[in-house]
Length: 347
Image (cartoon, rainbow, N blue to C red; front, side, top):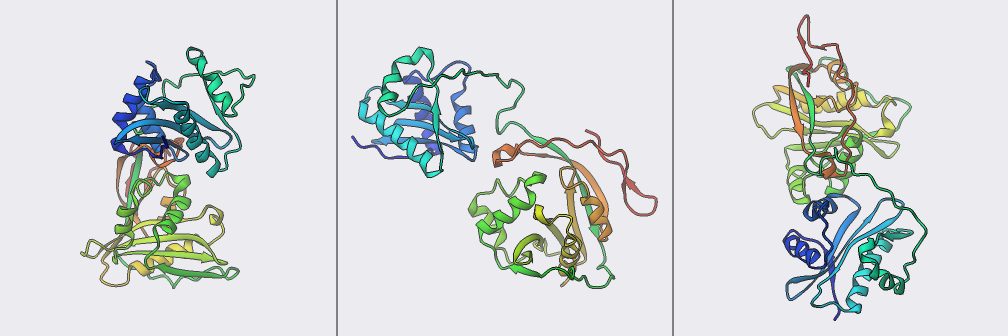
């Protein structure tokens, strides 16, 4: 019987857990549903499944850590088990590895399941002299259960700046172009690259349909700065409130362009664009996970802080980002205007 494998879908989960249980692959210290969810969320892992008459009959979990490929949960329905089906499972796993350029794959065999050695050996797998060591990460929350609290500072500008029009650095060839609209893949490139170091997570968690609906809205304007032909940063203006309140939803530079003198030009230019039309108020928010100079940069551009609160972000690992290392909370109050201050919230 020839099997066709595809990546797991939500409706497969119950059938896969049942298959693993009937194959004797479950152990008390591993939660199969947690393993499935983690594999689905991680950027370089998957679970491949095959069906017969709508029922899951075979599966394999595959992953690549950047050094080695790994194979787990090789399972074939005991009522349908044939050598050819097992070979097809491993063929699907190896094909997944090869398409990703994995140089070498490995798997672990429990001593309680040593009889499967011959099966893998016939497929070209060899036993190697290695000592496997492990340590449970008992304090690590499951992916999807960890959250991140961040202090958000909101800033506003109630009048258009009266400064001269901004000019780009004379030593650089620059162009500011509105992406009208950007493709989803290009927007994800901008968002992920600019925000990767600062735990920008919300748009990463949007599926393509939801993200497309947002970035193609005519009242959402995305301006990309190019320096010597390469994207250097972008600003996103959100006019959807229709009441004169306009949000500078996102602003940032590609990592390679931070500190090269283009940030202030981009920010001032995007601010001027945001003030075109019936704008009566421009506002922006940042948080303590952002660049350490973010608040100061916005203040120098004319924004004034007006609110501060704690926001709980979803687990960034769901989007392929690590849980961020916390920076020390600054002891200085955030400057407003005159003698006014906003005291940073302590967590």
